[in-house]
Length: 177
Image (tube, rainbow, N blue to C red):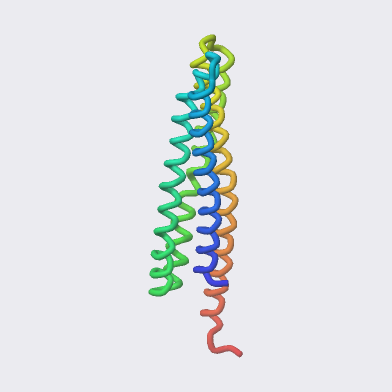
């Protein structure tokens, strides 16, 4: 496989994950709408706005990420066609650059979950309990995204490193049978 093949496989995985998250966000928005229409308890009414906001946020952010990845397909093909070695170097640098974010998003999502749990357990008002539940779901969604994103980025980086090493070895031994 070429570096372009690995890049396109990585994007395919990101598109699948993005699509699943868009569907999840829309499902949450739909649940909020159903609670608005049919919910009669104060707890059901309190969940409407947090579900709409959280579902909308997840769907919109996922759609933006998906559109960015669709745009990258043409950019990747062009960059690879111009200079495959430079493409690999650029991709390695790009992936290494965003992999440092995972530590921060892990802690941010964990704080969101703990704060949501605290809001749910401590607050007496249904709205604060609903906001706490929404924070927990949003934090769990962020952990879910980062778990799979980190795994695929790590594999992608490993594949690029193998190709880069093989390319370098081939350049060193050019002319040998």
